[in-house]
Length: 231
Figure 1 (cartoon, rainbow, N blue to C red):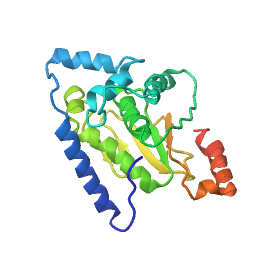
Figure 2: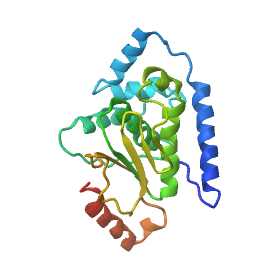
Figure 3: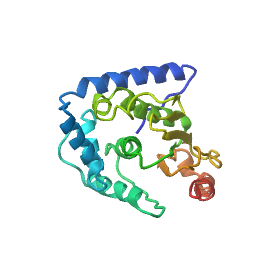
């Protein structure tokens, strides 16, 4: 689950969080073969429509992948998520798993990064329960693009800071827009040039208080049907 900040020192806390992410990424990403042949071989593996996502996660993010073995959930995600974006029709999946399974890391953060690197989506939108929860999630994506030396080595034309780079929106160097939002908020009319949102990830969109109230559950369900699904 992404870190959540609140209070009047929010922006300062977010900046400190970004600096912490940078230190972690730079400390653990070492040992990549820099030869052109090795770089191209890795890019070819990343671009594979079926196995590319698993390769991307396991080879570019050692600071997240601590064990070589995969859980049953991870096997499913590495197979299902690429199939969703490869499908010619719109697809909706609901994924539930216990805490500690790295759902947010794999689905919300790293899958979005894979779509950016492969340039297969133009306008991902990430929605979480509260915008204060979504901001740090976008910060993790920004940190990888800016500071991950493996991405910077193999994708110098994509990795790095984009021309729009703030708390709620980024526009990457390859012209892909990523926005974050809180659940229940207005989303209609969002565009990126000719593109409407073409990947929407809903991550922990309920909270412990609202889930207990039937009227709040109904309100969220109506918002999903009327606002999110038609995007």
